[in-house]
Image (cartoon, rainbow, N blue to C red):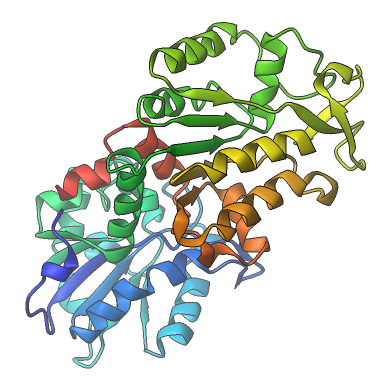
Length: 390
């Protein structure tokens, strides 16, 4: 990919900047600005280069229709305050828009196009729409890694019609993921959770030949317990996936990758219950497994001790209830305590929420907010937005 670092003189040139500013908004106020804050270096770099910046982004899923509640107005207000710059919100229909209409004042440097997903042509990756978007600027920059698994007009097809570059955030995401999948410092360990093994089977299979240890936690581990004939009570599990579990273990054995899963658990009778620690053989019919137990935490910490690289995706338990948050919190703090001894990458909304709640996100080498794109990259899939930049 050509990075914006390679751009020469772009003073007064129009740069179309694709960002993911899809932040949670409640009552017209942004409740988590993390995604906006992460792209500030790219915005500040382009402003320093005195470029004219046309920001393209979306909020929510309006499905090609104008939904007033999903306007980028709150994002505009936040950006104005953060950058201390005047920004205009362009609400005019893109098909009727000419590049000279965006910056009517020669002193203007920033414009924000209203929610790009108000147009059905965006998600259908329409050729004419892509060409029209490209005609609004002279240079295109993609700094929306979290949208780059989408084959959308402003993400992939636009690059056919305009010189295209990657932003700082997309570079750092790709660099971090390459370090744990291609340029690995071994031993390397993956801690992976979630509710469905079937949804992450391809990730696990893609990582097994590269990783030394894979620790399966959360509700995913319940499937292994069930496969082994253990009672899991009322715990969440997937039906009919015995063949998938068998496949994982055989493939791991073939590639000298060790698969670990909990030795004990913390249980409750309902989600808002207090926790009771139990051996897996003592689970009762009305128990719900909601966190790992103390023996499991000891084992996970021992594996972390001998690891040089850690990838973590998915909490260890139902951390929303403080009685079942110990597993996730303990592991987060233990990885963070390793400092430069470990290269650590964290991804996935729930996992990021864990480390944010502990205010230790800066103690990890890289924290991804990308969600789907993060997981598809780990699967080994080509992301349309990245492919288009190559």
